[in-house]
Image (cartoon, rainbow, N blue to C red):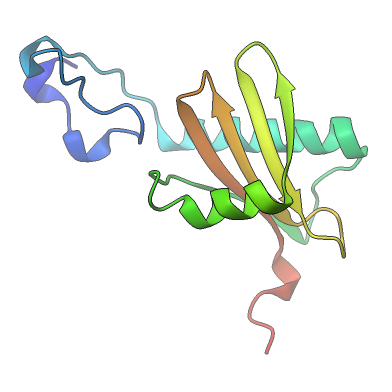
Length: 131
């Protein structure tokens, strides 16, 4: 897509318009939300398997969130305090913080090339809506 064809509301955080380039000269490539979710899930599942020799199976589920810097602040704060960083390079860094009780539930920030960030949770779905 070129210039005015680009749906500004659909631009992934961190990939907004380039201020130095006129709007009519900017280009965009559509990427499906499902493809981004599959990538995030693959990276998180792979990291868990390689580092913990575990599979993510029921009742655990993986969710991916699209967040800007402001929206991701609480996650980044938790990761800074409790997280561990893994780098598979060049260009891929994953920071995760897992709960001590099951060592599987947790939060993840997947960063590619220092710009593309995906936020992911792994949670025990059997614990949802427990009073």
